[in-house]
Length: 522
Image (cartoon, rainbow, N blue to C red; front, side, top):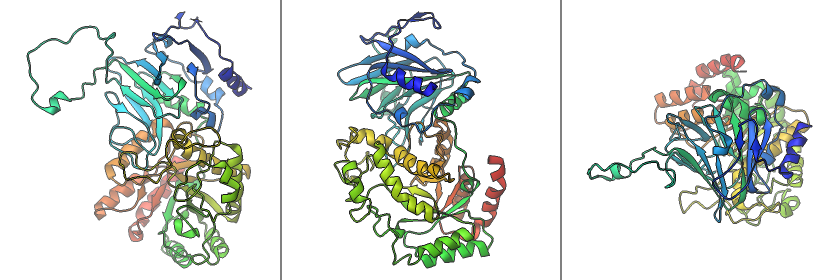
């Protein structure tokens, strides 16, 4: 009932001029009226103008855990809600949030290159290649948490930029900089990051309004806790999802898979999941979702043997539908106007699309497939000109979303489609996917990346938790045996251990450590 109440609030806007709790009039320096709603204990929504029809919270798979949220402390904001400036401009929307001296910021999704975000410009945009400190990543989130015990979430699918204490407006600067006569002689001095701003400025282009969610708590940990509970709570993965997964090479055949699974069992190397890469399809870029009879002449018997030997089976795919696929005709009118690798791009914002895609995959699930690896659901590298496999931002989809919005939501909607398929038949799953966003906390799945630097592994493990994300690095190429050991050690600290390096002989000791720690982590 309470969730229905929230839905009504979204369309029945009540303009509040007096807030008895904060003891003041809600005013803004801009010329636009701001609406304030209380969504849950310590969770507020500020709205201005006309937000986009589709937002990340519209796709949240579960409603808030109200009873658990009610048990958490509210804490005190270091500012009042009327201190948050929201405006609609000719460019789009903008938001300004005060910063305190000594305050530090964290978050923005699966980030590399930075941990403390104050003093940086962040653009959490989906990309197939996480880059430096700017924010391009597999799992971008327009959401940050503060050491002062609150979180700010911009509920938009637009490419958004956060200036985290980097700039000062002319009407805010209190005094002129003192004159010292000093002359800077190097670009390092001239262009040094000053980290001197006292506001976070948020730029949301191409929209007529925006919503901002504020999570108010007693400390940073409770902010993350409230976000996860508001997202439907955390997921409970199956025990096998926390174990070891071994991914076979792309060109493996049925005979190769059977040889590897026998090797693991004969050598008593713990392994819970066998993952098949693109070679199982008749066409892979784009995908047919049809078993390749040349490589897997009797996949039914193979699956029966694997399941009998206590393996779960995971299949690689992406969502771009090849012309020879049985899904081509059912999805042709439910896809965007541009192709990727010659395949359709399904519009997962539409329930009919999700139903048709899931109905076909049910036959694979019923054959014994326990989960899927959802590849390339992010975007081609936006930082270089010769990476063009992704669909353009100007793409138009039947739901009314454009390519920019779909890029930001695609991985999450793709994952939700297949997760709900398993839920509909009361089956446990734990899946891999390469792109996520906001409100994914309740889905049993782990992100992965094609980044293989050891330092990157550490940074993404540390940053992922601020936004309720699970992330598992794949152990692949290593420069030395020592580096391989370090990477494998990091894998043991992630959601589940994924190894596709073909270094089988040295896995036994570390896989046993993972198995022994599973009851503790579970």
